[in-house]
Length: 92
Image (tube, rainbow, N blue to C red; front, side, top):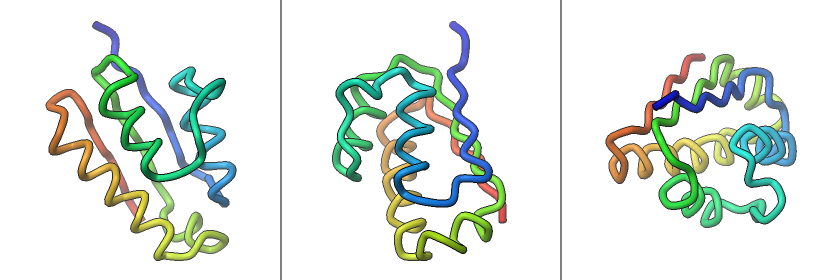
């Protein structure tokens, strides 16, 4: 099965984050822009394997707060523990 990849590098706002991730995984028509919906979609709605790439976290945190970035990362880490076919690659 082909891996589904979403590259979040360069994302500057929460709105842009949700737009990009939901577009890449083709769930934009019904996905809500909140952390609970993000978790649900990543754990139940998308067939894996899934890879999230997020480089330049410092750049993203320039317009989103670190608190917002860390909450998103917390969701990703939760999904990692729920799914064996979820890969998270992050760098500053």
